[in-house]
Image (cartoon, rainbow, N blue to C red; front, side, top):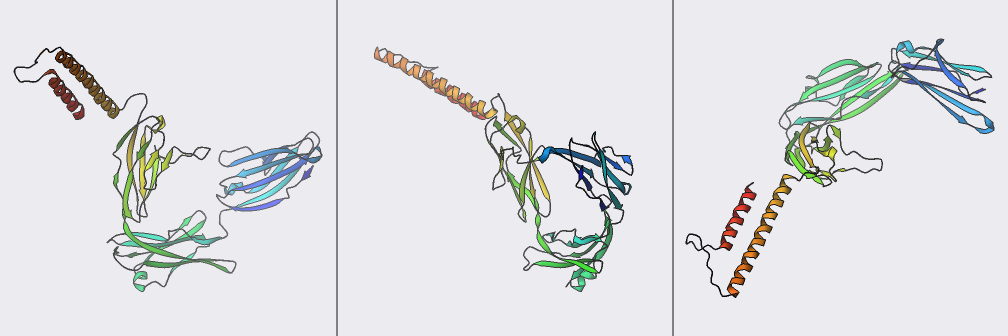
Length: 375
């Protein structure tokens, strides 16, 4: 057998992931088992697992590769890990030591707060600058007016194995019609083995107002199965809200393995359902999002399957009434024509009002159409 994995030493922090690899060539292939401090490892959900592959290579040999995965490590995962490989001819072993530290030796300072702050028109806001690192970073404002530093505050904490520091101060009120930008500069730094690491961030104050639904489709939209439907949704707000859609809480569009989708987001924020399916007979939610908030609006899509919609049935009813009236009118006209041809003077009246059968039919048709329209 030939071992390709040298002995290794791994140092990881608590909650880190690490892996060990073991590779062997042999004929016939080998079976690989993993041990830690002399105890055979067993699979543990979301913590310890391994995978093994066997590939045939030149010369009739087999390459057996096994990788041990440890996720979200704890201090008790510290120890000597051993990979045992064996077949009917031989047994071999290689090992690697792992040390899990409960203290993170070094993490370069980096920002954990946004580079934008949002202040509603005419209101006050807070400028925040936070950084994380190990050792604890130093965070300070650069070129800041003294009036702000005198009213500012500092908070400290931990995130995982590293430290966090956050500075903040109130500002405002701010107004949309003010000229110029509100920009504040923040510096975060820490040191490791005599070397200083630092980063600078500019934080911009944006004045506006939250996203708010202003116009769009009625709360209920009806279509037939296989037909298209457009769900409109518009929001106001500064910055301009970005519109997204969900169906039963799942983000759209859902793309198939060919890159196609039955749901297409239009430039104006509307959602096109290209071919309504039974699964579309549900609640859709459009969401307008800007830096201030996310505003949802629910729209129910009704997909008629095998049953005519109310609007279609109403239209069909009117069409049938018109057709019947037209046929009856033609029949009456033909009847009157034949009687005139025979020079028979027949007068049809009703209570002396002078309304003949054609007039009565027209009045009846008008009454029926009027009732259908009002329905």
